[in-house]
Length: 151
Image (cartoon, rainbow, N blue to C red; front, top):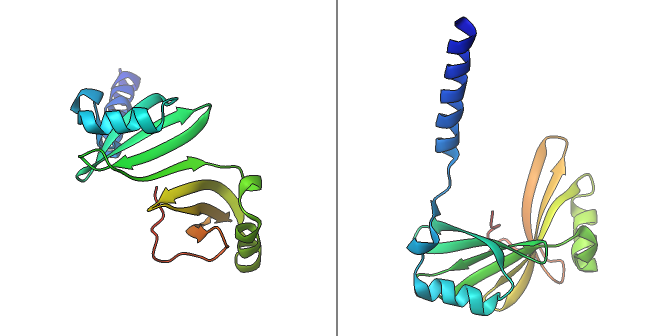
């Protein structure tokens, strides 16, 4: 009996914890038609699309040929920014050089190519021991303080 009660408490706590961590997921039917049309015309090969509401905007998480993508749209369907996973080897040499010079003790944990306002950036998550740095670089290796890291 005691183990059953503990199991029920654990299960209830797990469900409560999951609810607290819940993103603002929304159903495809709740996404404006203009947003879905822009996604399908810009990314015709998008698969496994999941939607989230980000303030007044809509974020699509999807795959294209096994590569994870995220795209942010405003309610009228304009693409605000787009990112996709890249391997460390795909980062521009200038970005890799800047990281090795300024963050020598860190390793690259995750990297994305970010397209915003017609410009390509590279955002990287660096780790050292239990420390983490989330940084954005221009293609020339300059660290960008005016462009926010997009989680």
